[in-house]
Structures are given as C-alpha cells and as structure tokens.
Image (cartoon, rainbow, N blue to C red):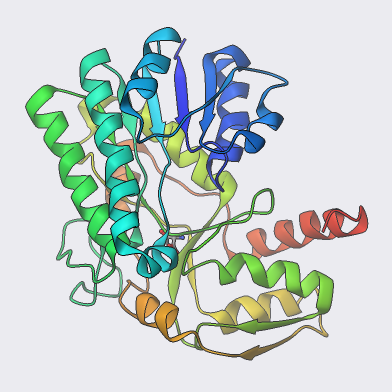
Amino acid sequence: MKRILIVGAGGQIGSELVDYTRKIYGGNNVIAADLDESKLTKFQIDGPSEKLDALDGEKYHEIVKRYKIDTIYNLVALLSATGEKNPTLAWKINMGALENSLEIARQENCAVFTPSSIGAFGPNTPADNTPQDTIMQPTTIYGVCKVSGELLSNYYYYRFGIDTRSVRFPGIISYATPPGGGTTDYAVEIFYEAVKNKHYTCYLKPGTFLDMMYMPDALKACVELMEADPSKLIHRNSFNVTAMSFDPEMLADEIRKHIPEFKMDYNIDPIKQKIADSWPNSLDDSCARNEWGWNPQYNLAAMTMDMLEKIEEKYNKGLI
Ligand code: AKB
C-alpha cells in the first residue's frame, strides 16, 4: 500500500485529494500537511496530519522519514493573479516547495506529483488545440515557475531516476473549497453568485476561452497518472489535460438553463484579462489519453448541473 504525503492539503485541490486518496489507500496511509493548522482539523477524524511549511526542508524531511512516505503530492503554490502582485514571493514559495520536495524525494526515494498548469504556456504558444510539445514562453511569474518546475522535475527523473509525474491543469471548478488568487476563479465564483443573487459581474471579457475541469476529474487525473504503468509513459512533466473549453457567455448560458433569471454583466480586471489572453483557448490532451488512459467524465452541461445542485444544497443549509 502506498504511503502518501499531501503537502498544501488545505488548498482547493488538496482538501479534496486527501479524502479521495484516503478512500483508496486507507486513512492512515495518507498524511495531510499544511502551513495553516486550522485547515487540518477536518483531516484529523480519519488519518494523520502535520503542520508543515514546505520551505522548512528539515521538518519536511523528518515527516517523510517518520511516516515512511513513498509518494509526495506537492500542491503548494501561489496562483497566477496573486503571483503578479508579489513575483518574488511567488518564485520563493512555488520553487522552494518544489526544490524541497524533489531533494527529499531523491534522498528517500519517493515518487513526486506536482501540478503544472495551462499557465505554463504563453502568447507565442498556438492557442487552439495547443499541442503537448510546443513553445512555452509564459509571461507571468506563475507560468515561469511552472515551466521551470516541469524542467526541474524531468531533470530529477533523467539524472537521479526519481519518479516525477505531472499534469498541466486547466481552471479547476469545485464546490468544497474555493480557489484563491487564480485567473480562472470566475468559473467558480459565478456559481455562488448565481445561486445567492441571480447575478454575477465577470472580470474576464466575453470571448475569453479557457480550458476547465470539474474537481472529480482533477482528482482522478492525479491518482490515475501516479498509478500509470511507467513503461507506457513517453512524457512525464507535464501532460496536457482538459475536460472542456468555454468562455464566460457559454457558462452563463448553461447556468440559465437551470436559473432562467440569472444575469451577468462585466467589469474587466486588466491584469487577469491579460493573463487569460496569454493562455491557450483549448488544449490537445491526446498524449495523456494515449499514454495513461486519461478520459474525463464531466463536460460543461454535466459539471454545471452538479455544481448548481451542490451549491444550492449548501445555500439551503445556510452554509454560504
Ligand atoms: C490560475 O488561474 O492561476 C490557476 C491555473 C489555471 O493554474 N487556476
């Protein structure tokens, strides 16, 4: 049975990945770690958790040894919009956490999963059906960290034989834990506003197409890639993955199928718009499909229906 450490467990993906992996591998085999102790309480019912600053290499290493960890999910990152507010801090956190993860993995022979992002691409990348192997010249610090992270992770594989694997996530849509500081966050916020106020002011222009994915597919991607037969992997860091591509108008129209009175207007955030304009409209994820069987379950219609159902449930219980 795997012994898993999820670093950054309190974030949007981490908070659901802990439960998902505990159901597969058993509660005691999945250790949730986060800098913010208050985010760990919910993980303490069915397994171990540790307060950890991923930049503290000594403590990180001690935890990996103590729990006999063999697989690290390194989910620590400042997202794209927050990164632009403090590029030095973004580099320090995003690269520092990765560097520690890889070095500890090298010394303790662990596999490492680190998410990359559509943010690894830039304005010179072909925007439609973006190929797996193509120009990567991002113009955000977040993207610079992601490309550097992909290269460094591949280096650890080629140089030291460390089993590093990664996917380029699109915007992740979920109802359990909100994202924070991303450019794609509008696609989550819109659902809360649609349910609560029947109105949303969008910060990206109509016609801004971006890849997106519903959380159940994102969790499936993490585990399926880490379980994939290594002899089938031609790529490692990092695979294009997507489940849908839409612009704000398409998402609003889909929501209106369930809430006909929903209205959307626009107040463009120039920084987020510039970031979104530099990213692809739609990815080609055929390498992930061919090399490890990637096959997402949720399209725009299925995701919208489930999101509205879950958020209405939270609203009716007075949780939001
Ligand atoms: C962001 O918007 O920064 C993230 C991402 C696409 O990596 N959601």
